[in-house]
View 1 (cartoon, rainbow, N blue to C red):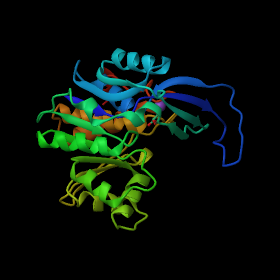
View 2: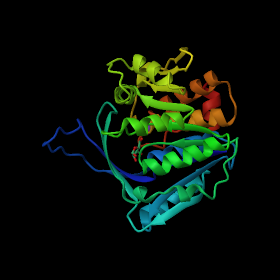
View 3: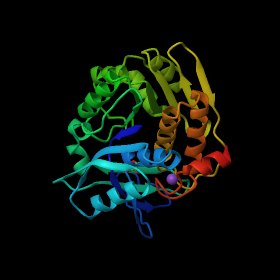
View 4: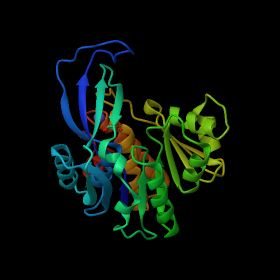
Length: 304
Ligand code: RIB
Ligand code: NA
């Protein structure tokens, strides 16, 4: 069973010709209110391709309309939402601008996500079949303790270092990697993480290989270039991405993480799990918003 410990947001999305620079104002014809949050996105990406009842989320929303509709949305998508608490803070909100090429810029107002504690995950009985999934939009130390507990029961931990915190202490990053089986980063996050641990490089492949030396599998998602999996023994697997014309890349990384978690949960060969994750992430770029383009199990099977 997969447990996602992470954020739930409502995404307010404005489409613009180009993303405003500091001090600049741009006009957008309107905006959309969509479901998002890296935790919720990853849980839904996993649930859409999983057998029923295999994916749960531990998270925190506000006692407000956004929180209730986000919880309903998780349940509608087949995510077990028994470990979603409500807090006195408002539901997390992400302010997203998407440009004509499908690139985005995002500001996340954490709200209730900042109230998530490890206690939320206590009702979930972790064992050696658990695959726990973490990101960086909820309190780090709470995530770390849940990860360590899952590890202690023989379960596996997938950690997506997104968004990469600007001043992340080396000690925290080392503890994170020690508690992680599969560490997932994009090119920038790979370079930033390697730098924190003392490896100065501008090359994400050098960074990925360095991070894997600590004993985890380091998967670097590289957009149109596909994904690279660096193993502790020095091996590197590469998966090419299919050529697409992205409409909105929001949620692509989350789709990758969720589908990879499903592959691990179903004990697929690692390369197959990576290929499915890559393919699902491309499909997610073909629809507006984080969740609309996430494939179902059938869509993923037909297309691969
Ligand atoms: O990864 C995409 C997500 O990041 C969005 O849904 C937004 O909520 C932000 O958390
Ligand atoms: Na998308």
